[in-house]
Image (cartoon, rainbow, N blue to C red):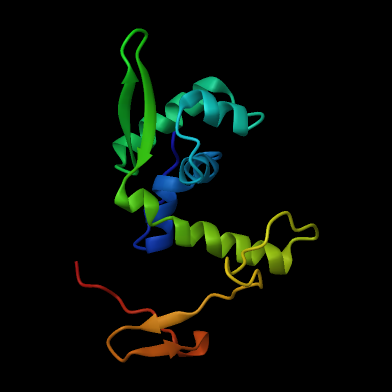
Length: 144
């Protein structure tokens, strides 16, 4: 059963969708091309099969993935990220960058494919056509 945050906060409401244990790792496997139940189960050592099944159903309900039947008898599906699922790539990359900086043991680095040097996250304002420093960011309430 999902625990839900009842807070008017983007982070809290996003965690209501992707904050359960294993959910981000499942989505990461799908982003990496492991798109069948079997391949996800093999890549995520230790995930219970019933939990994987429940998470996939939940991700489908939340429109982050869509199942595509690839075998009729017995029915087998591959799971495809929707556009909102694909948009989580930036979240994964941010977590990788945070891990490079703060984990005692770093397992992965995010590098520029052409030169193989580390990259950094930047914020950009398309209205001003300007790279924005983190110190210049502010949160604005949105009228609902």
